[in-house]
Structures are given as structure tokens and as C-alpha cells.
Length: 85
Image (cartoon, rainbow, N blue to C red; front, side):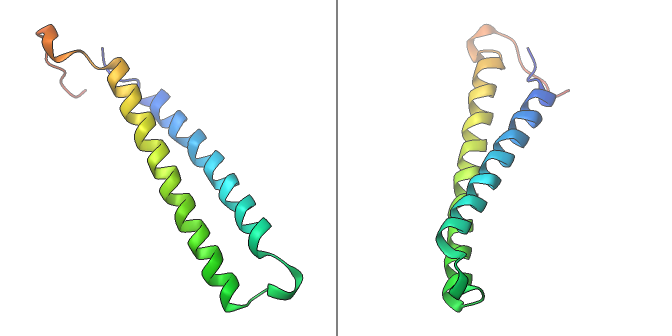
């Protein structure tokens, strides 16, 4: 059984959207205040929050990809070899 690439791409896109929204919410809540509009601490802090969010999103995508691959890929002991399409 081959991995359903369209499902995988759609799932990755969903994760990307969820994490992007989460990152924006975190940055807005922590750093966008009236007196901090363009301060160096705002830029530095928001960049750090974004980097952490991107790492979290990457970890989720990797985990989801491995989970799908483990479920859908043929077992090594089945005697079949999975060839790329």
C-alpha cells in the first residue's frame, strides 16, 4: 500500500495553518503593546517566539509524517518491497 500523498500534504497544510495562527496569537499577546511598537526588545522577543513556533510546527509535521508512513507503509517482514511511484 502506497502512502496517500494528497492526504499527507493536506494534513501538513492543516498543521502549518494551526501553528501559524498559534504563533501569531503568542506574539501578539506578548509583544504588541502600545509603548513597545518598534523597540529592540519587541523585535528580539517576537523573533524568538516565532523561532520556537517554527520548531514546534516542524516537530509536529515530522511526527505526523512518520505516523502516517508507519500506518500505511508495508511491513518489512511481508516480503514486499515498496517502490516509489
